[in-house]
Amino acid sequence: MRAFLFLLSLLVFAPSAFAAKTILVMGDSLSAGYGIRPQQAWPSLMQERLRELRLDYSVTNLSISGETSAGGRSRFVAAIKEHQPAVVILALGANDGLRGLPLKQMENNLEAMIDTAKKAGARVLLAGMRLPPNYGPYAEQFFQRFGEIAKAEKTAYLPFLLEPVATRPELFQADRLHPTAEAQPLLLDHVWPALRPLLK
Image (cartoon, rainbow, N blue to C red; front, top):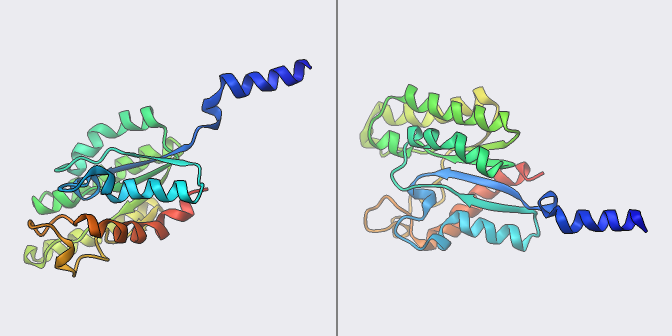
C-alpha cells in the first residue's frame, strides 16, 4: 500500500518529470511571422504537427523581427537557462547579411550559440539563408558560411530556409522579403525532414 501511495505522489506532485520537451526557435522576422498572425507562422504550425503526431514536444518561439545574430546571442544564455530545450533551431543571420555585417562576426555569434546549446544538452538545427545576387561576391560567401559553421560544429543543417518559396513571388508579401501565410506550410514541410531526426 505504501509503495502505491508513493507512486501516486510522484504522479500528483512531480508533473514536471513528464512535461513535454521543448523545441526552442531563435530566429528573425522570417520565423516570427512578420506581417501575418503569429499562429500562422511556421513554428506555430510545427506545434500543431507535433500534437497531431503525438510527439512529446512543445515549441517556444523566441524569434524577433529585425534580430541579428548578435542580438540572438545576447539573449541566448538566458533563454537556454529558462526553457532548457531539448532541440534548438537557429534561424538567424539574414539581417546580418542584409546589413552587410562582417561574416566573421556572424560566424562567431552562431558558433557561440551552438556551443552553448550543446553544453546544455540540446541538439541543434542550423537554418541557412541566401541574399539577393546584387550583393555580389558577399552573397555567395554569406551562404557558404552557414555550411562551414554546420560542418565545423557537426550540427544538423538546413541550407536555405526559404528554398521552397524563393522563386515564387506570389508567396511573398508586398515588401518581397517576407513570406505570406500561404507560404508557411511549405516552410514547415521544408524544415521538418531536417528536424525530425533530432526528435528522439
